[in-house]
Image (cartoon, rainbow, N blue to C red; front, side, top):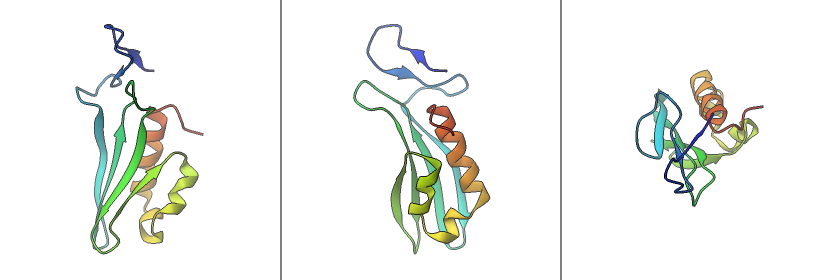
Length: 99
């Protein structure tokens, strides 16, 4: 799935279809009065990569997600959003952490 850096820099390139940078917004959606963004940070030589959900609005916060079960960290209204669930599943799959 991952393509090792040809210069041996210890980092990774984004999967096919993603260009440049070490992070990508997977989904940006409004859930009630909150703006919710699901981001993936690709592995680098210093990091194993991660998925985080950032919420702007009354329920603001930034939540790191390592497994699909970590969705329970999110406020209930956001956790139950099927769009958010799918985006987190996709991001975890891209990091090779899907169930």
